[in-house]
Image 1 (cartoon, rainbow, N blue to C red):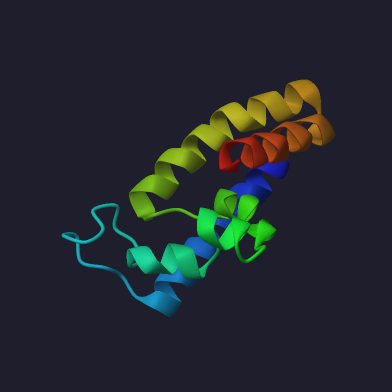
Image 2: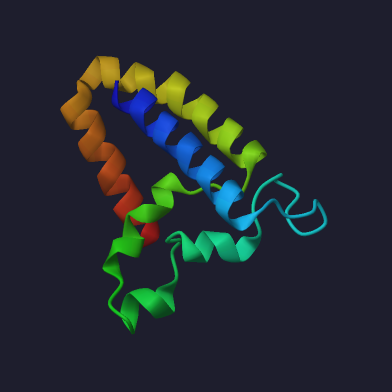
Amino acid sequence: YCSIFFSAVQTIVLILMMWQCGMAPLQINPMVGPYPDALNYWGAKNAVLIIEDGERWRLITPIFLHAGIIHLLCNVSVQLETGAFFEREWGSGIWLAVYIISALGSSI
C-alpha cells in the first residue's frame, strides 16, 4: 500500500504544481510539466538553501517532485511494478525504511 500511496501523492503534487505555477512550453520543459523554478519553490534539492539556510527538509521533499508528466509516468510505473513487488516481499515497514533512506542518500 505504501508504493500506491506514494504514487498517488506524487501525482497530486505534480497536478498542484502545474495548477499553481502553470505549464511550461515544451521548449522550456520537454517533460510536459511546470516551469523549472516551480521545482525549487516546491522543495527541490538546492544545496545552497540546505547548507546556508538550514532547509534540511529539502533532503526528503524531492521524492514527491517530478519535472513533468513524462517523468512522473516513468517513475510511477517502475514504483508500482517493482516497489509493490518488494513491498509484498519485505513488508511495508521495511520497504518504507529502504525508500526513505534511499531518498535521503540520493539527496545527500
